Image (cartoon, rainbow, N blue to C red; front, side, top):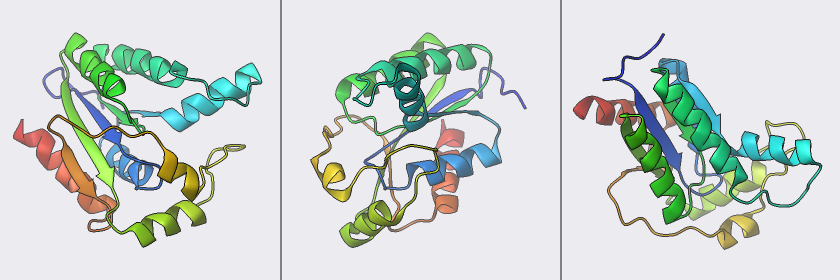
Length: 175
């Protein structure tokens, strides 16, 4: 199902690893067919293709911006699943939405229950073959700049993925 330009949206799910972004993104895409961009998958593919085990720097995001731009231009909505930790990455997503005249929905997913967040990080299994999930210590050390702009904040300790998707779709309909 293609979305018309007036309904075309760029939905960017941001937040630290283990907060529930991927689970919520999958719920969104199951409801309305959209292009799904997962930075973890893109970065892992870049590392695998290059034979490099090191950080790929901004390359994964740059690829995702290009893919989002192309699909939004075709009239598809896009769900981006990424940590999106820096002001510069958030501004880049905003630029993609503006360049394609797409509605932008920025979401910060967090988990206010530290014990639950740690349990999720330490108990989850990678769903991408060969992908190394971050440790709890790595999550705690992750660079993550505070937001200075409006966004929908979802606390995954308080709402299910289904409820989060309802909140996101409600936000989209309001605009």
